[in-house]
Every structure is written in C-alpha cells, then in structure tokens.
Length: 162
Image (cartoon, rainbow, N blue to C red):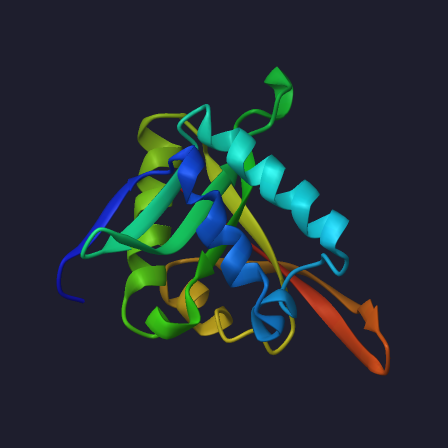
C-alpha cells in the first residue's frame, strides 16, 4: 500500500475505532453486541494506548486500521497478552492488517519483552489465513461459543511465539 504509516494510537483515534465498529459486518467478528458493550471495549482499547500498547495504521495521514496489545497486569502472566485488530473495511486486503500485526509482534517482543501473543477469533473469520501466514498456530477451539439469534459460531484460539 502506498503511503502507509504505523504510529502509536492517539486518543483522538477513538472516533475511527467507533466508526468501524458501527459497521454491522465488522461488529459481527467481535464479542460485543450492545452500544454499551462496544463503548466498554473501546475504552479498554484506548486505555492500552496510554502504555504505548496500541498502534494505528494511517494512509495519507488518515487512520485506516488499529491494533492493540491487552497487557497483563500481573507479573507471573506478564510474559504474554491477547491482541485485537481492526481494519477499515475500505482498506482490507491491502496489507494494512499484515503491517499492523508485524508491528504489534515487534512492539510486544522488543518493548514489552513478551514471549507470545494470542488472539481469539470466530470460525469463518477471514483473518484466519493471514494469522496462519504470519506464524500463528491454533492451540484451541470451542464449538458453539457464539450464539447470536440463529447463528452459532465456534471460536478459534491462536498464538504466536515471539
């Protein structure tokens, strides 16, 4: 992608995160349903930005994707963390997600000295092939994890050794 830049997330990026999560097809891949649940998750995400654990991808200076490391607050489990990723639907399949994941892995290893990062996705999530390509491996699967009206989805747990 031309003119793609990765930077630390600013508090002002919150409006983009909310806008992307407002797209029903995007929210489908996350556990939140209600406005309150979305707001709580957005606040958690932005809270990690205070520690330098959130990154924003920009194209021509405009945010087009974000990723976050949810750091563990307890010393005996501080060697790993979960992460989340969200790319503006207009910029998907253009390398934004790949760049964000590579940068999150680098940040996790070099700055936070983490040994592994993990992510939870729902089956049929299109990000699965990207994660596998970037050295993530499945370590768990749970059928029937999400029940949304008539839709039932399993979850897939993946991790990457750093």
